[in-house]
Length: 391
Ligand SMILES: Cc1ncc(COP(=O)(O)O)c(C=O)c1O
Image (cartoon, rainbow, N blue to C red):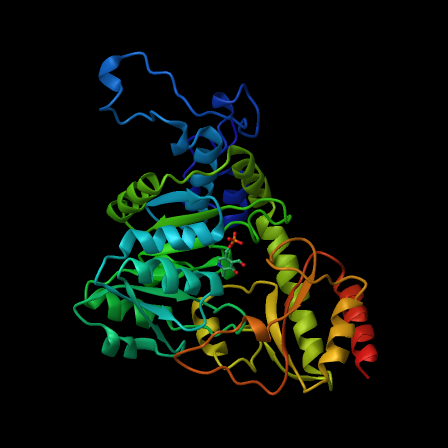
């Protein structure tokens, strides 16, 4: 069988994506795993009911979830992985694993809004304090770490505003004080940034985005640098009663087979569109880490091997009514939350930015574009027509 007895770590990522998690012998010869719906698992031996390393309840996942986990580890690395029902569920699972009452979390100011909301509501209620820090803090985060610090949460590039953090410097400062680091690594899809090579302890993926890739499944994952950390995440998953649907695990795994091809294309189209936007008189600046004009381009170039197809653009000041017309009348771009699917999306973002450590300042309205698999020439024509409607 293809892939049998192969050391996947010696193969290139495209090959790993095609092979990882395949086990036809477990699935009547099928190339893909069966979608196995189950709750109860029958146990023959009373001795195995309460004290066994075997699975005793299907909330732990069946073969299809196992196959997805194998594939995730083969791509991003790490010692263990736990699935979650959504990307946000993966963020909160990672946070619940390390948070403790009386403890303090250090969270990047440009974090995904719902992750911030979780810290400010549920964790706050449970006696966990959150301090937000400026995305460019780097190794100076050492000055914020104290005896109560129970974790550092990063997301690089940050949501909406795309600041690239100096993850190795932050992770090293945290490690020196025995503080675990979590990184929301969704933007790189686990392909273009290797968190465990940069000292991160827990990597979060919203698999809903590029891995699933077709706007039809929610799922998340928490990958751990060490087996010990992996056990802590798994225990928290069980304590919280979380699960990950077999149908959605199948869709995410199917999406991953074409991940590198889609992402390469979406990244190339994204960069082409970002460069074109830089030439437009209606645009004040484009916020794309792979553009030399991005303030953190040097860090991105040092740490990443590629870019995603989602980025921001600050427009020059424009009347709200005109912006509304432009956004609502595109032929190809739709407005909608999420990103990373095959379909191009655009959203206005000014109502979606909360900052407490370092205010967000912009020359005009900020929009976020997620570039899909349409031809970039058609997308550029659509954007150009939108600018014509602004005039
Ligand atoms: C950076 C980031 N992390 C996590 C999530 C949450 O993913 P999900 O929509 O699957 O809950 C999102 C969703 O937009 C995101 O952008």
